[in-house]
Length: 414
Image (cartoon, rainbow, N blue to C red):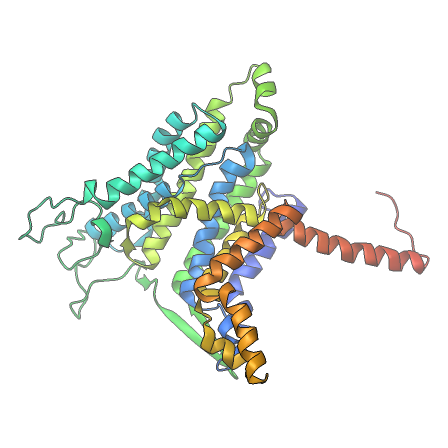
């Protein structure tokens, strides 16, 4: 099916089912209940799941296949966001041209950055990519944010190319030559797909449950599924095998007479284009682009996502992105008042003690929980969440095999 083997086809179908049914899966608890705090089925968060999933999938093509660790991939995320915003400001609010420009611009920058950075390997490559990312951040934050048209004018470049620390935003003065400059009500138009607004949504009420179906989420999910399918084809292609051989033993590959540099540069550019696509989608869902998307912490975040999910696996980066974004948006909202509500059935002294023990790990301290989980995964599950899932599945298969053996059943050899 679609040029994939049975195992990859099943994996793709699983991802399709999970993404399409996300509004139901991520809302397991009824509205108004104490556990509704853990529901994650609202459009903004679901969009973040799939967008950062694309970012992590692309990063995994570079890091998972070639073993080259980039600390500067957030530069392409920011470039994609700025490119999409300028397309919205100048051309129109259709998301397809914006995404196309995001991918093209991030690819161009990736060729330049990759050509220089790939002259070195190991930690030197990582530091070079980090340096480029921080230079991009500085350009976006100050150098390209100069007042080009003067303080008293409302020109298109009044706040420069990037908008500085406040970010690049849409205004009523933007020309939008192929789209409406303002809505009928005099407001700024929103990103859309041939008239379908990305912010439009429909709700389904089933008893005490409320399920939200967002046009923006399903568009981003469709793009993520295409990106995931492309990554499978890359992993299984001869090109992917060459990248794996680079990670395994680049020196031995050199002895065969094959030059690995063009393959590594191609992997870097593809990975950067994935990041640019994610940045364009971020701007399409929320029309704003700021320099913080280029900061080194954003690059470190995608590294954590990939390692947490499973480096070199197909679905691992998506799982890692979902796990980190879930903790960032759900655990960070839990405060001491919510904890006291949960443990109100305990005696006062014991209630305060339990809350005091748990509180440092949630709310503003959710990074502490993430750090502990990350350490446990690295120590006990080097293959990430995917390895953990494989071990659990293996335990069930082993139990099933033991039961069959006890019943006198045998499995024919293949």
